[in-house]
Each structure stands twice: as structure tokens, then as C-alpha cells.
Amino acid sequence: MELLKQLYEIHSPSHHEGKMIQFIKKHIKSLNQDINVDIDKKNGNIYITKGQSATYPCIVAHLDQVQTKYPNDYKVIMTEDVVLAYSAKHRRQCGLGADDKNGIWVALKCLEKYDVMKVAFFVAEEIGTVGSSQAQMEFFDDCRFVVECDRKGYKDLVTEISGDLCSNEFIKDTNYKKFGYEPHDGGLTDVMTLKELGLHVSCCNMSCGYYAPHTDHETTVIADLQNCLAFVENIIENCTLVYSHEYGTKMFGQGYYCYYSEYDYLYEQVEEIFIDRPDLTFDELCSYFEPHIKTDDIKCAYEELRAYYGFNTTDQEELEDKPNEETPQIFTPKFLRGL
Image (cartoon, rainbow, N blue to C red):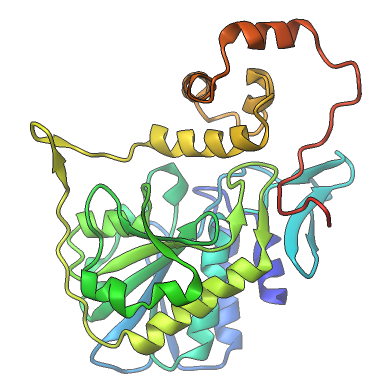
């Protein structure tokens, strides 16, 4: 897992992905294989082709992360089961940027293993799929399918984002049940943007073992990441057809389109935290997010979730009027409890 650790140690916020780009170039060169690397100097996107073939399996991932800075003593801690980052100086856990360094890791491992591969790495996904919106679409003309590993958890196979991303034939041929995955709808990410730009083959996004993304409590469960890699390898080895597919946004009711907005994505993150810590005050909840995240949106999601789960405002006011005098407990993700 040394490669994974090296990726976590590189800080690559949106529009500052230079160190990650240089690391990937150096790593590919160290493989000493016939791999062509083309970097779009205008925006920093990386396009990689290995081998000569009429068609290629293709993986995409994004180079940036949400966390805007690391403490000077940022340290990656790897156990047999879980990876996290920690600052001894600040006595707190730090974000890994596993979203989407786990996806980068899967792509690089497959690039090393297979003789025929295409990989694209995009910049600035976290601020609105900026890199993929400027993708060189001709790169994908000879691809069989496009896979992305940019989803929290362990079992989501995202086959729909405001519309179908792939054909039923592709879903069936992935043999997803063998790896514990389930078809799911998802939020904005690079494969959706590629489909909007006219990608003519099936694509999907999938869970790759990170939890509490975009927060200081982010962790990776190694077994879940390794299972994701095995699933992607299975797709590469067994999905050998060209899985043609055209993207069409689904319509409901009187012609309204179903969009998965940035707020929907934020709502999911707030809900994940809320389920683990329903006693959080609004100020405590805000501390889980970077300062540039809109506070009004967090508050709206917070109030919606309190109402949904049966917490009323009066209860919260009473809770805030009577603060706990004991030392507050440090939040521990459920995957770390008992370790």
C-alpha cells in the first residue's frame, strides 16, 4: 500500500494539482513500460494510453481534493484495516483527500497491470467538474466503456445521474453482485460531465472505500478499496465489447428535469454526519466543512434533517442552553470504533 500512502501525502486542492501531476508522471516513468502520457497544458488534464488496440478499457479519476490545507505535521497512519491522517500538534484527525486519491490509486494499479489501457485524470472536479468539462472527447472515441471510482462507501455502482449512464448489457456484464455492489443513482462527477459532452459509450461511478469525505474525519477502509480494485479488474477482463450508449436526461411530471444539484450532494454529506452524531449543534456541524462551503446551505440541510428525524427546534435550544460540562468526545467514524 506504499503507493496509496504516497498519494495521501500529496496535497492537491483544486487549481493546485501540480504536485500530483508531477508525481503521476514520475510514477509512470518508473514503471519502465511503453506508456504515452499527454498533459493538456491549458488546464492540466492528463491523458494516458498504454498499448496498441482497436478498443480500450478506460478509467477516469480527478486530481484535486476539497481540503485546502494540511497541518505541517500531517501524518498518514495505516493499520491493517483503516487509513487515516492525524496532526499531533493540533491533536486531531485530518482529511486524507481519499476523494479521489483512492480513484487515482485504482487507475494507476490497473495501468501497471494491463497491457492495454486508457486513463484520464481531470483537474478541479470538486468545484464543478471544471477539468472534465474541457475534456478532449476524441480521446474516448475508441473506448469500450469508462469507469470512475469517485464514490464514498463500499457498495454503490452509480448507473444513473439525472439519467442513465450505461446500458443494461454493461450493468449485467460487470457481474456487480459478485463484489457486493448494487446499482444506485449518484451526484455530479466527471463521468456525468463526459456524457453531457457526448460520450457514446457506457460509463459508471463506484464506491471505492472512503468515508466522511470532505471532512477532517475522512478514512479509508482498506478491504473496501481492495474490493473496488478487484471489481474494476473484473470489468476490464470481462467487459470486452464496446458498450455503446447515449445519455438522455429523464423527465418527470410536466416535463421537469431531475437534476442532482450541489445542494443535494451537500445534503448527503450533512446526513452522513448527522446519522452518526444527531446531537451536533449547528456550529459543531459547520466545523466539519471547509470555510468556503456556504453556511446557509449547511443550515438548510441541518434544519431539514432535524425535522425529518424528529428533532424540533425547542429541543435543540434547550440542549444549547445546557451545555455538557464534561470534556467533549472526539468524533470517531464507525469504522474506527473498537480498533
